[in-house]
Image 1 (cartoon, rainbow, N blue to C red):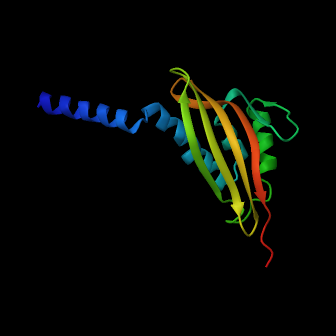
Image 2: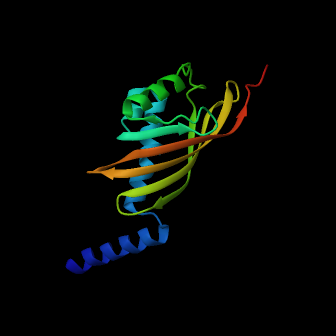
Image 3: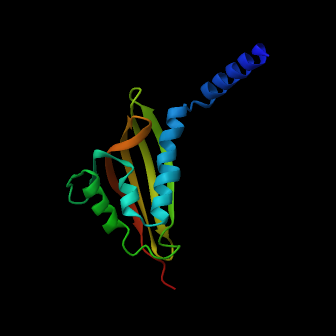
Length: 157
């Protein structure tokens, strides 16, 4: 029996090495692919802000370049960003994670592209680079930088 359990453990370690994805990387991706996405769909700025470390920040590179620090300020950013997202088309969000780079046991950088909207409402693509930090048992956003890639206006009928 011990041999079977040991064999299974070795197979799981080998599989995770082949996939190149650690448990921590999967947990980090879940922040964006599951939690961020769910809070976006419900247009809940307060819940989005809970993904940030209490002292975390957010900055739009092509915008004012102003840094918004702390969860309360980040929630204010998302309250503005979520305004008018009242239809299924306007709530559409696709997150493509390009890379999760572990910078240590409790720090990682995530590079992704977020696509917001629909052809009937206009489509915005933004590159987002995020530093996440492990705080106790969960990962939180420590720093977030966003840059617009493109905007395609809504198609007129």
